[in-house]
Image (tube, rainbow, N blue to C red):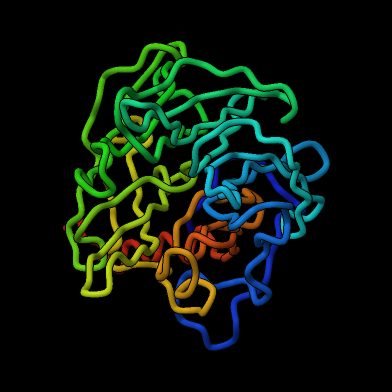
Length: 316
């Protein structure tokens, strides 16, 4: 039995696994939970992240507007399913993640510059006032994802180095910082190694600490005659040296199968950006972008996922 190390979330959204369903991750039956109708003047809302906040939940949402500008807005919910989004844009850019460390909420996102994409970093305590910090990676990277606590006295972030194009470079690295300003000590984590992720991989939600290592959900991409297909995979990383992959599933845990995942602005996309975990029950709620159009929700447990990883392990 694997154990989540962290806080209890008694109000974590949940739906039991359908009877007879054999896979480790299952979808919320009322997906998608956030659509363009949640925000005036938006073309699509997707690839967004949420965290427990006060008596409910808060989130940062990618909204592509009718101008097709890419912006980030905040949102709040009492149940983490029904969301009220703010029209005020806090930053320009896309694919935000949010991570709470010692009572401070750190936002990381893909910030657009005339030299390429960088990892923007900002912090808040109330989701109203934000302080932007130095970019964490310059000049080109995507998928900046923080670990939820310092490791050996340092902040740690996963990134995917890239160039100005959409695809080149497909590996996950991590880097360290003592002050969330200067970043270095880069370490290689993983490359695409299997058919379903043969084009590239990138970090997804904030890693979940367990007694067996850091549970990491990530996206993997395959290129077919119809273009890219994004799916969700999972791995376990060493707790003290998280660049070391202990176990890694040889197959996806969730892939575009439903209409809202297969049809949209960018078809065939499951792109996980958040995972909330309840240490008491072992339940995990995963939030993912669907077809670059909406936000959807899926469920698993730490045992379901860890057992699946080990039963289908690439690491021999």
